[in-house]
Image 1 (spheres, rainbow, N blue to C red):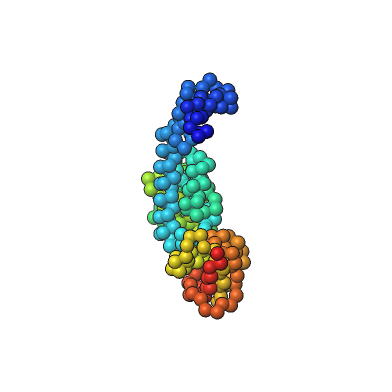
Image 2: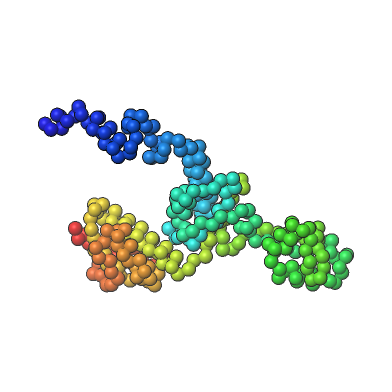
Length: 286
């Protein structure tokens, strides 16, 4: 055959093509490529360090989500990352954001940025010195920015409150967690997830839950992976209705639906999605 006749000449043809395309002396004189197409000189240690950092941050983020009882499929607006001593490259950042199901990543330089700070008077120190004026100091501290008071105490050693100069021994600084953040930390590393949800995030979260429910239904009905279906959803509540209206095309693509509509059905399967009971008709179309 032609292939058999040309086989002995293939190595020479390959080398000639390589030289013509690259201008180099020979393919046989070049270095082997590194893993995944990376050049052989790529620093493997740096890649390993990046992957280790990604795993550590993802682990912390998942722990924070679990502690806050936030659903895995609910997208969140942002994750705030503290990872001293290492800069994450763009590819690793995308992977971390995807694994944590967040829209954006923000870097912080210290754990203090992830905490709330409350400053209260040390009455043992201030009472004898200020007498009744300590009540004014207490009221002023209650309305002050605790983080700023703490910063001034650390940088200049004192802070002026209600006309009184206070030092570190005159107040007590108490740390707490932001109510809207889920925080996990380990050895100077930390991840804080922003738990505040807007309408767009809630709709996307419900859409993800609906996709899971419909794909589980496909499995229960023993459909082939490539089967196209027509889906009708009845008895949808406001959450599912809003999710389908906003993300119908995406939901249909994820469940291989040629038709995805809200409306009455004549019989169907019960589904529970985001606290709402649905009746779903799912019919194979091809």
